[in-house]
Image (cartoon, rainbow, N blue to C red; front, side):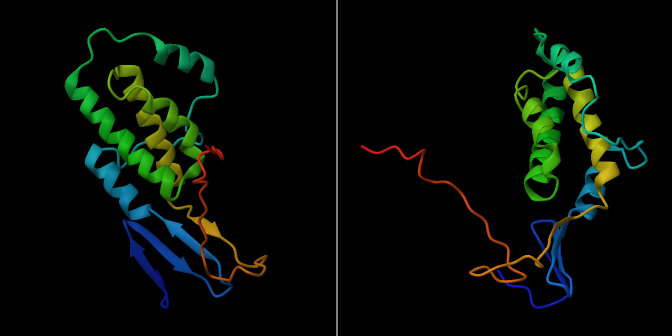
Length: 160
């Protein structure tokens, strides 16, 4: 993928390149659409994705939900899928919160939905802050204005 212009969109993420060579990724427009879909455009933003007393919240989430509501479950799964996408693309700091919530996608209850909405409210605070890669400290063999991704596909070096 190359970018020769001012900015471009790819999978609902807007990428822009600055004169210094820095590249930023923003999901402000798609985040706004998520809020409109849920009727949360004017919700009060939160400064953290989870409350400060995480232990109390986790204990509440771990309580068994004997009769999960299928409609609530479907809504919860939609929110989690949107949060996972945000986490992977532009908001990595919600990774822990989303991984905790994703454990309950089949038996979600009211506390799970409330916490998922709190993470959405955090995105309301965070939506105008892009993820930025700076190119000033770029050294060979890497090139300025290029994004490199790496993955460990060695399966923990298992050898026969």
